[in-house]
Length: 88
Image (cartoon, rainbow, N blue to C red):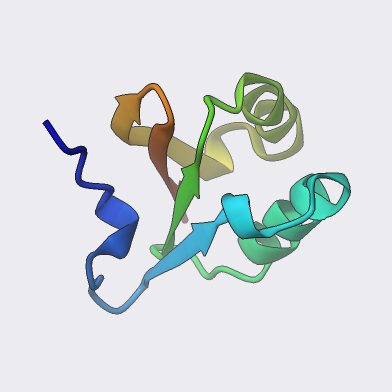
């Protein structure tokens, strides 16, 4: 069965895709934090990756606390999609 990766779908306004697979590993966390820092309250970044980014999530928790809500949209081997929503 073919996995449908939800980052390939069009998204409503205020939901911005971020595909980490296309970013060099040494720049990924800085690029992700830069993207999150540019979001306004109520906006969401849909993060796509090929592995579960547990170290990144720990760093996000330390940096943003409850200011960013984290919700898995897809969590399968090779296909991880997480919505990071900036809360007001």
